[in-house]
Length: 246
Image (cartoon, rainbow, N blue to C red; front, top):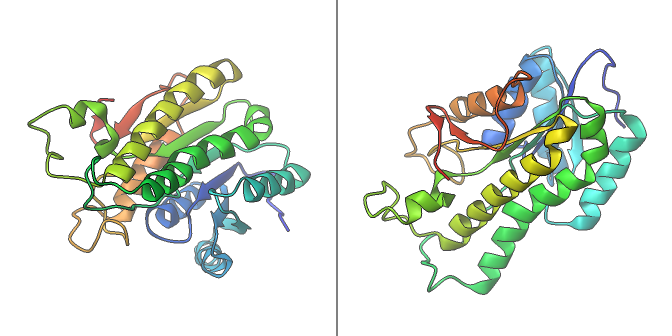
């Protein structure tokens, strides 16, 4: 059941049961949003909700598998039955397969699954929630991408990501960047701003223990894009330092 206080803006964060998604959900709640903590693992989502509520925030768990069209449609139907609008959508859920594979050695199944979760998931969810986003009259969509998906970095021999393989992941993030640009173009006239972000190398299950950034640092980038003013950018790619080249 959904019971957001009517006085609060509402935000939905996918993959919010851990890591960067969890930190983003907590940051948004601390800013006064009612947060829908969306993930496949209902028990872990409920634990995040309890943490947010203990800190004085407002949140609810939402079962959602972004790789499943049926799950996306079911969630959209449930939200539409309870809410009149959605102010913020953070497409954070993602997977990293084929870590050591180049584009020549990558397995087709890893490529397909990475694209389904990391690129098509955000696209299909944004499409399904469009009526609620439009009704907000100035909604913000934040796609959690990665600089390793930047074509500029791929073709730059001096790139700091030169030794990075992970072709299925990199390809899926490149596609997500394209999705971001097309959504920004399509939704501009509806007042919906759509931007991509790079969280940087972050200490999560995906990033590993040696990563220099914390999830809380990454969440600040998402928070900035989720709360852009009316004259803020759309169709951009950003990290904590500013603009990332496509």
